[in-house]
Length: 70
Image 1: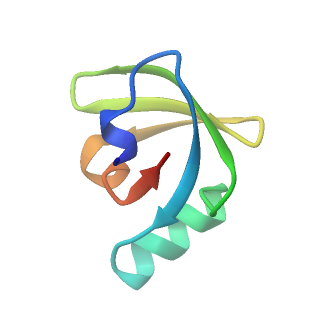
Image 2: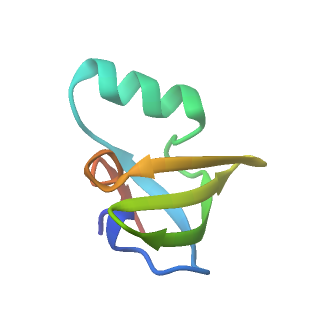
């Protein structure tokens, strides 16, 4: 499922990162790589706040659809 559909408080694992080369590279640079754990802090207003590898990020829901999680 896309990260944009994960619920607040959930911890999920990145299964795959998709998207154009630039978007994919940007997400991977932030730590969204296969096997990494992502904790969803909050969702709402078309945005999602997550913690990846100890860093907190805010993502637009459209960008978060490129991160597939399990």
